[in-house]
Image (cartoon, rainbow, N blue to C red; front, side):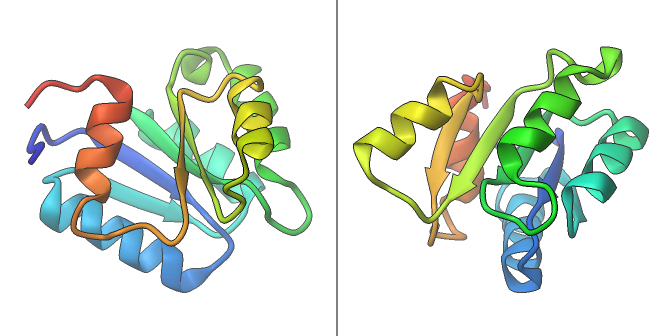
Length: 128
């Protein structure tokens, strides 16, 4: 289990996903976790927090995850912040398309809250 106390921003329009993910990252992973309900709020929150990683939902109303990722890459302080997509689409073609957008990894929903922090650490190569 990773207990490195990194800052992670979760951007997802589903309040239950945000709550479960932030609790899982905090309780099981020992991370400082923050959440935003949409892409606009998420970019602003990430600017303030300067996270070590961002968990980003792919399908959101108004601004989707790929568009948010593009906006994050335009912010100098966030340009190199690893972004991990959260998605319910699990087809090989979907995952390949998301990887091609510059995400560090893709975690599928539903995820196991008990292993989310470890999945994130493994995906980003974080040492324990």
